[in-house]
Length: 116
Image (cartoon, rainbow, N blue to C red):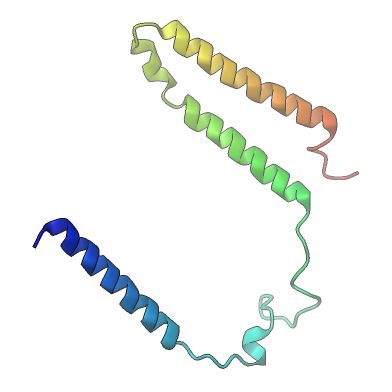
């Protein structure tokens, strides 16, 4: 038998067995204690299903954006060994300028203000 079909067959059988075991193994009779929200050992003071503020999502998206910027600019020190390091510098400058303009726009629109 070939190696790749054997690996695929073993992975398929193993995943099916694990899915069946995880379906039948746990107890399926939840009680009141399991269904109640847990708040550090205290009795719940209110509902646990409150919506998040969109400001938290905005900060998370901005963090991811600037984290992505760092990931894109990480190989920049090795760009000077290319045949034309000026092109690498121009692309890095364009990325930084675009992100800076986006940050200025968000700041001027008031998207970074916590209190209204």
